[in-house]
Image 1 (tube, rainbow, N blue to C red):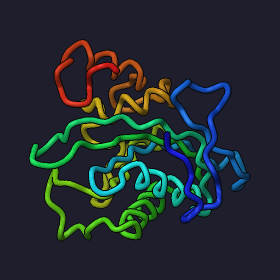
Image 2 (cartoon, helix red, strand yellow):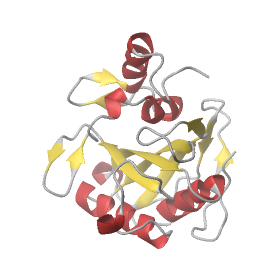
Image 3 (cartoon, rainbow, N blue to C red):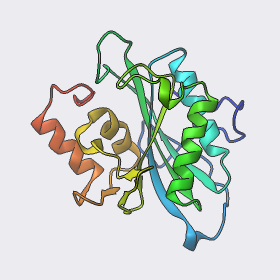
Image 4 (cartoon, rainbow, N blue to C red):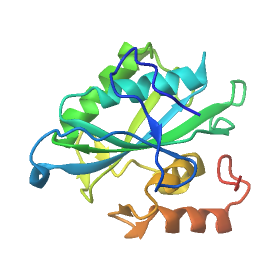
Length: 203
């Protein structure tokens, strides 16, 4: 189970008594006018080094961002890599947060956290290669964004069990604004259509 390390953030993560059994909930600080807040969903993954610690450090860093309240953190699942198989399995998790930041600013902050935690710069990365930490902005409310720097919803999230499975434990009713289906519905469809795809199988 992921626990806050206290090294990159000040907010420990505790089990939520009313939430899904395998979801971790986080104290929600007051970050601003609720009318200006947006709900965002993130996907997190790692297959290098101390994977549980990588996820915990990423969660702490996200929680420490100004204008962000981390509201839930899914327990991780282990899945085989989607790309080249000559690398270790991934631990994948998901998080939800409330934020006063605009989506581009949030995306930039998440990318900076990746670099701060030791992920290689973009120019040095291998497509579908191993990674110390990966933090994806999956959903930002029901916004649809298509710019050179950012695409939301995250492309392909509706086809990836390793994204949908942890996200469904903490945000099953979050709506994909293009497909107009909830995360739980997308996962159920994927499990029916492609039960052998990496990361899709139940359990």
